[in-house]
Amino acid sequence: MSPMLNLMDLKSLYSGLPDDRPITSIGVVEDSEKCPPDFYVVSRTHDQDSDADLWKDGFFGRKVTRYLCLSKKQGLPGLSDYIVESIAVVNDKEVPPDGYTLLPRTIDSEQKAWRKKQLCYRLSKRSLTSNLVTDVIVLSKMKKAPEGFTLAGEINGLTVCFKSVPNSVASTPNPSLSLTSLNSPINSYSNISAPATPRRKSNGHAPAPPTPGSEESMDDYVSLKPIRPPPPLPNHVSPVRNPMVRQSSKVVAAASRTYATLAAFQGLEGVPFIISPKLKAMADPASVPPTTVKTWTEYEIEREFSYDFRTERQTQQNSS
Image 1 (tube, rainbow, N blue to C red):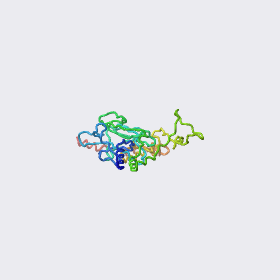
Image 2 (cartoon, helix red, strand yellow):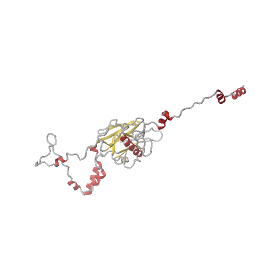
Image 3 (cartoon, rainbow, N blue to C red):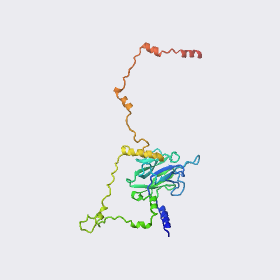
Image 4 (cartoon, one colour):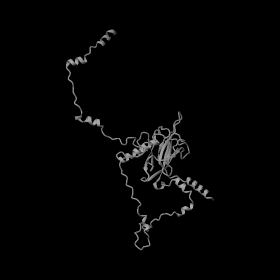
């Protein structure tokens, strides 16, 4: 068999493997054929291969459709190292959970994305999250998530589920890089060796450092030392009160507008809850000018407000 055939077989085999790369962005489109570049549309249901329209409009009037579209390449601008960690379905008027982002409008037509129910998702930094969402499916008849999937919720009679895998499993190389590496001779992999791991004693503990003259090498203990310090633990502070989270929410909100998404707090981030300076000045008695009340005499009142009812009397005489 020629090397070219081997290369084609390897490429086709790779394309048939499950794509465990994490999803980096989610959107909603009205027309399934107008999916943005680097996105793919979820147009068919997983269980019955039927239309995965999440709007399910009535039979009368113009047909309205809504389809999910996903991307594993195109992240939000300025958030390229962020991935989708979780997905949820909430009611139309319900506030999304902490840290979740809404999808209020379609990408292709800027129309309202949902009715009655709406989908939201949470972005997390890839190096800090423990789980990654790698797939989203829509079910037409099944109301429970298939094996390996998690139930997000129901939208207009259709069930939305997502596949979540541990971070280490989802961290697979980019297919474009892998396919490029297939062009090199296969024998080039023969020089790659697995890193040595330290030997362990039968009791499960790492062996003690070797003494001078022992047969054991220090190479066995080098891999026991961390190559970098552990990341700092996240602060368990509400995003509304944490200025750092509030600032990142601004970035997410600004970036989300490009993809018809909206931050979780609906534009209230950064609004200072303080009294207006005008009201403060009015509350200070020293800054308010004294009120002067004019004293009226009886003559001034009669002259200012005197009324003889002449028009009414004339009207009454004419009518009689």
